[in-house]
Image (cartoon, rainbow, N blue to C red):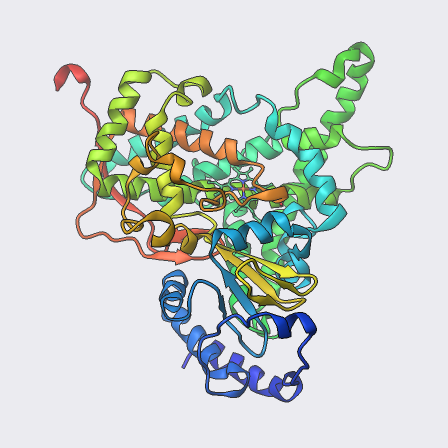
Amino acid sequence: MNPTVLLSTAVAVASAAYAFKPKKKTELEAKSVAVPAPKSYLPLQLDTVVAYIYDMLMGKDELEMLLKDMKQYGNTINFKGLNNDFIVVTDPSSIQHILAKNQPNYEKGPYFKGIFHDFLGSGIFNADGDTWKAQRQIARPHFQTSEFKDAALINKHVDQLLVVIDKHIASKPDAPLEVQNLYCRFTLDEASEFLFGATVDALKNEQTEFSTAFNYAQSLTAWRFRIPYWKYILPRRKLMTEIKKLDDFVYKIIDDARERQAARAQEKTKDENEENSRHDNLLDHFLSQQNEEGFDNKYLRDMLLNFLLAGRDTTASLLSWTTWKLVQHPKVMEKLHQEILQVIGPDRVPGYDDIKKLKYQKQVINEVLRLCPPVPINPRESVEEDVLPNGYYVPAGVAVAYCVYATHRLPELWGEDALEFDPDRWGPERVGKIRPFMFVPFHAGPRICLGQNLAYTTAQLALTRLLQRYDIKASPGFEPQQLGDIVMFSRNGVEVLISHKRPQSEI
Ligand code: HEM
């Protein structure tokens, strides 16, 4: 058996003597219903914990494992392990309760913040209370300005994406192309420029030190979610070495930005309208918002890495699954292509206003976000004990996750064809049936995604230009293997056959 499994089991057994303490029920608990938990026959649910870790190491998809358990135990489940509760909710009213109505009671919490702390520090993604609020308040205007609406920045990186694809077609015209990795490099370049004002150039250089270190930090952090007592089991030294590489890169960018800011401050005396001037990137925007104390470099480093994590892989995941769904549904792809031809034409570079006219494209993207939500499951920690709208009891200080992946597939919400890819459900006749909190790929409530519009804009511009230029088809025999990580990717990428479209005159 894998040493990780053995070790986790050993630690679990060793902790058993300490962890097992029968507790008296609180008044609220006595009045409400306990969340159903999968059956377990050993103390501390050791059998289910070991079986779970084993399944994961064998490469089983956790999200599909969850759907299977839901069939047996219902839509709210407590995956208890080592006497720790991990409640998963999927019904819209419970999601609304956690994300909006009783949101202050469901924090990121100490356990999850501990998991992310080495990588993300106290950045927006990993903060609660005033620390979170202050960052969100400063960042929000940057996402509401027209910076990305003029689409120039995004289109610049799409240009580079097309260069890489053209090179592939020229050198290996019949070979499949793996696009997931390309999209990750594209969104890393775009997001880094949007956030830092300096691109990482991942499309030009497949393995940059920054992207390799970022990938490692992200994937090791994801393992911390899965391994009980990860602190004692997972290595930290290599993680810290990789994080140091990220820090070196980001601190240099911060130093440059401070120099720019100092130069601007001198200019300000010449131009009193500085308040109204536009900041090209989020870092400059933050520096412009400092009070006398200023922000220290660690604060800015945390801020930047958090936004990069939030924005990069999510959009790449969306583009990857969209490509996969389109090659599986050539009629949808054709309809999309026709819309692009009518609204934009065969080769005109689209702008922000153009893509907002692509109504069918938005339906397609929403349908991908429904079936393949980039953030498939999202945990919180309860502060006080609580009762969910469906009557289930939530103890204080436990993990409560909402599983978007499952909610978006429930037949009682989406109909018997819930698992079918059908962009027409977003058409004018049927869209009215989609109720609040049934579709939550971007979260909801006070912590709703700040980058939602940027994500749609990026995906729509990239998709438009890809379909203007290329014929994209399924690669025979290829099947993606879904991986329910922090961000939902395909374990083996997304392989497609790609070639230049023939000009309309030749068709
Ligand atoms: C398809 C693409 C995207 C999806 C599906 C997505 C989804 C989400 C989700 C589910 C959350 C909630 C996370 C949590 O609280 O645990 C979130 C938060 C956030 N997202 Fe996005 N996101 C996307 C793209 C972006 C982009 C491009 C950016 C910006 C560069 C961004 C910035 C953020 C930020 C800053 C937060 C934290 C908000 C807060 O806690 O107040 N996202 N996003």
